Amino acid sequence: MRNNTQLSDELRALILRHAASHMALPVLPNVVLSFYTAPTQPVLYMSEPALAVLVQGTKQVILGEQVFQYAPGQYLIYLVDLPLSSTVIQASDEEPLLGLGLALKPEAIAALLLETSSAPPKKSADMRAIAVSDLSNDLLDPIVRLMRLLDRPSDIPVLAPSIEREILWRLINGEQGAMVRQLGLAESHTVQIARAIKWIRNHYAEAIRIEELARVAGMSVTSFHRHFLAVTSLSPIKFKKQVRLQMARSLLVSSQRGVADVGFAVGYGSPSQFSREYRRFFGRPPREDGELFRANEGPANQ
Image 1 (tube, rainbow, N blue to C red):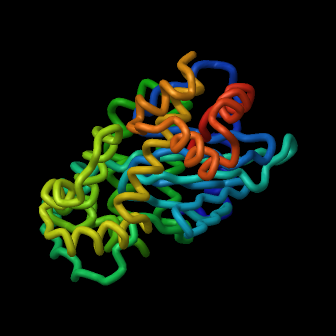
Image 2 (image 1 turned 30 degrees about the horizontal axis):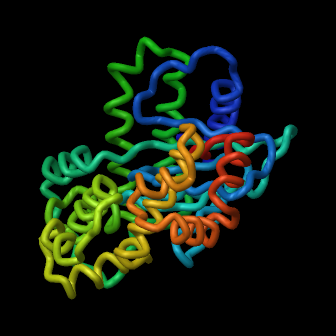
């Protein structure tokens, strides 16, 4: 196996060639490429479980009060839907930020755990759903082989699934393995909280009772509060508010609806409360923010 530097150089060349190309990108269904030629302002978005790798540039992700910065030689992993703020810190025309994101599927992780009959990890007090780690040679190698398929798209349907399984296996047995395994265990606390998060995202405009969320998660109210905070770094109420405000921003950008109408659509009964909370969260009033956001780039890749 080639060393880490050689693999990183090849991955950088592959991403640069395909992400910067004006030609249609061959389909790798679970992969998104990142290419930025300048730093960006913070962009808020809802993540989904994914592995994010950088080979050039620096990126910062914020969850609540936690700041995660990662650079070449590192990866970011998150296991549930999270309201994140993403900022490209270092990028230029000469050295653009280059990276990729790979979606993580709970069912694929569960299948690997079943096939290997591996014992479930001991429960840990650390229930994070997001972490940064160093990129090992064992993990980088299959990532490079997956990206090579972009040069041979006819191989993708046959070879991509097996290479993605290898990547998952390296993650399961890597530094964040205990965290990744939780995504494949049906009754892990991470999966239970993920069910409640999905419910919030589907019912964000409704009044939400904590008792209902605890029932969806299959926990007592006390246990639900504790585990939700441990996984997301946010209380359920703050989490719901961030989802509402991010959906409001999407509506302001993508439609011609007025500010009051958007506020009502995402669950606010008072236009003044909506405008006040929107300004506090995004730093600008809704109308001004929507106009500025439409004039700039859309949400960032992972």
